Amino acid sequence: MPIYEYRCDKCQLDFEKLVFGQDEVVCPTCGCQVQKLMSACSFKSAAGDFKTSGTGKSGCSTCSATSCAGCH
Ligand SMILES: [Zn+2]
Image (cartoon, rainbow, N blue to C red):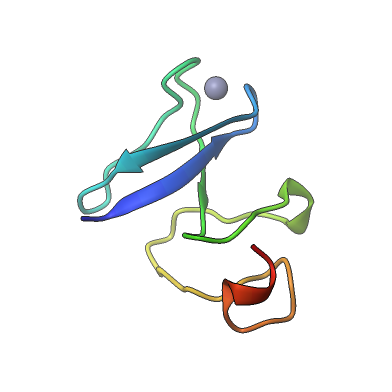
């Protein structure tokens, strides 16, 4: 099942949601667009912009590791 983690910048709310295809995901609290977090990887908002482009890369941009084993 494609469960992804998302974060709302406005509410600082982290939540998980089942997503099929390219469904648009919005914050359940404020309805704003949210950032998609890479699965199983801690995400620092200072690291930049993970926009939902559908690439589905599994690498981590918050650390130098190619997998997220070292940063979670
Ligand atoms: Zn929100």
